[in-house]
Amino acid sequence: MPTKQSGVLFTLFCGVMVLLLATGCSSDNEESENRLLARVNNKTLYLADMDGMFPPGTVPEDSALIIDAFTQRWIREAVLLDEAERNIPSDLNIDKLVRDYRASLIKHNYEKILVEELLDSTIAETELQEFYEKNKEQYQLETPIVRCYFLKVPLPVPRQNELRRMWNSKDPDQLKDLVAYCSQFAVAHLLEDSTWYDVEDIAAELPPGTLTANNIDSKREFTQQDDKFQYFFRLFELKNRKDIAPLSYIEDQARKVILHKRKLELLEDTRETMLEREMRRNNVEIYNY
Figure 1 (cartoon, rainbow, N blue to C red):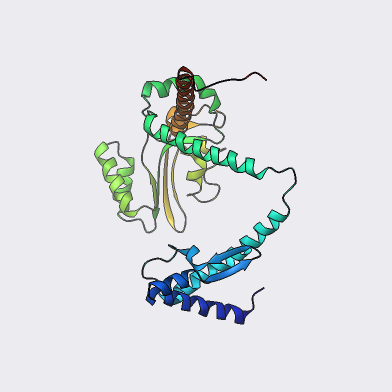
Figure 2: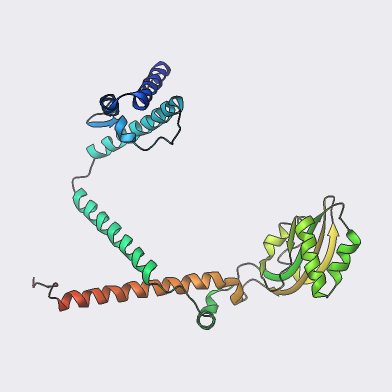
């Protein structure tokens, strides 16, 4: 374990190295970059190994701290690696693991390129609807969801009479005015009547126990206040737990599933096309065993 004094000396040494790198001539720079920073058995760390790790404009003092921190991390990693290398199981084929990992990285990178170039990410509404009809039983709700209006306005309520008039109005223009009002004064508001929301998310904005999965059907519309806020709630539609989720609620999930399936099909078709091509070229041979 390095002592406090050795840590200070090492930091000073790093500062000197950085100054040499910043101000020295070409030969001095080469000598400085080849300066040994640390060694763990047969593993070594040179200043040159940290090339590119110093942001432009870094002052020598900060560079010394960067070098010190990196070196301390490197030492710990090197000690662990050294110990691991000495304890490799006799039946562990490192070379094969490296080859397999390299092949996996190369294939993954090429498949990513293929997907980016060839995958059609456009999903028509008819395809989305068809997927939903075939799979909607998989999308049972775990918690209730609602279509609703909800406002949470700090006390004292600004322009309270005007707010109540807008809230109770059926005029679409008044709704636009209500949205503008909430954008300015409300700390939370939901005014999209076609959007589904988790009951738990709305309940989290209300005083505890005001709205729950068990009582929401009986609280279809209410206004109330506590010592900080005035709350407004209006329920349009409720889907209870275990009901089938509406398509609009699970649309993002459905699109991801469709695209994932399309991606797998694309890669499988591409593999088969490549195989057929190489077989036509007589580049594939299967030997008896």
